[in-house]
Image (cartoon, rainbow, N blue to C red; front, side, top):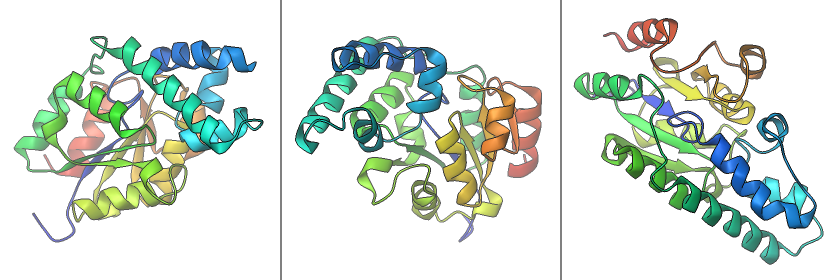
Length: 223
């Protein structure tokens, strides 16, 4: 691999698999007793793509930091129970990963989700071993929308932002990848084209089998 080569960087939730409905259900189970209920539209604006720390600070300000962490852990446990056996890849994902493997293009997962969730989804899809690194926003000084998670992802595989592509479904995720200098394709699982482009996406697609996405990736990766 060249010293600063190409890479494909993927968000996990809502990008590799459409898990937003499961997260919404888990949030409502755990947050309703604390006075918060979310519909899909509100969740896409205020929850999806944000770190647990920022969510708990915003919606649980009356609780101690320790209690905030405990409530978020309860939500993530609820999500993992709901998600068990329910994880399915977005259309076209497996073909894209196989193309990247054949071309020796490294792949990195970049997420604000806890590591247990990330590993549950990647192993549930059967693709854990295909990712050279799994970057967790909450394990860094800054999560998304800060560029640090994507910069760490690039560093892990010695890739150049100008020769790489990112795939994201949330505003904070698109902002993070774009701020790291990576051309970012917005995946329309929870947000529309306009919202994703406004956040910095170069284009959007409904899934990985979208002809425009397939064309752009082939052009950028040289296959």
